[in-house]
Amino acid sequence: NIQFLHGTRYADFDPHGGFSENDESSIITIEHFNTWKYGDNFMFVDITNPIGQGDAFGTTAKGNASYYAELSPRLSFGKMSGQDLSWGLIQDVLFTATLEIPESPVEQTWLYGLAVDLKLPGFQFFQVNWYIRNPDAPGVDTGQQITLVWGAPFKLGPIPMMFEGFLDYAWGVDPLKDNLITAPRLLVDVGDMAGIGAGKFQAGVEYQIWRNKFGIDGMDENVPQAMVKWIF
Image (cartoon, rainbow, N blue to C red; front, side, top):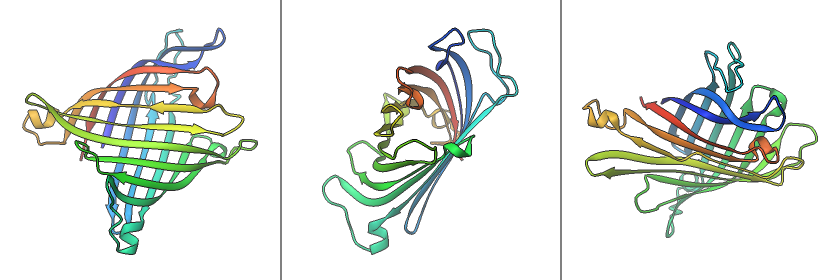
């Protein structure tokens, strides 16, 4: 799928000192997910301000697009062993890994650990991933992270909708501060309503909450983002 998001309250360094929540940005996100015989793969790339964007201080970022990507393969112990590992709310147990790829290669982070997929009423999927965080950056300790990922389709009267999102909580990555980021989305299935086809085109809002952004103490973000999403 391809997403377009726009918000006006992203947190950044204030040129007058400290932090602000006044940056306006547009983001194009390209996502891919697939399953295979022994697991699944997820990957995305964010392109922030692909054509430049002004901010509340009158500066511009024209020509200064930034990039960020993640690769997240998982291997199912149930599928590899041929055993049914479901029990209660647990659907499967997996080995999980992620490579975080910012623009600077010296800031890449490797994550690896265990995951469980849960069967929760009303949810199409719900993942709980526990990672060891292993940054490439010199002087930064190895820490841990919990990542939740979910998707729940529902109807509001006759309107088909999707509640989806993720939550990352990272801790112990000294000297960085513990940080939490979550981005729940509420999307209307416009494609279904317009007769284009269910799950083809969605529009709505994503609300991003980030505490100690990038592990920086006191750099907090609360930004509603208008969002459209094409799925193919």
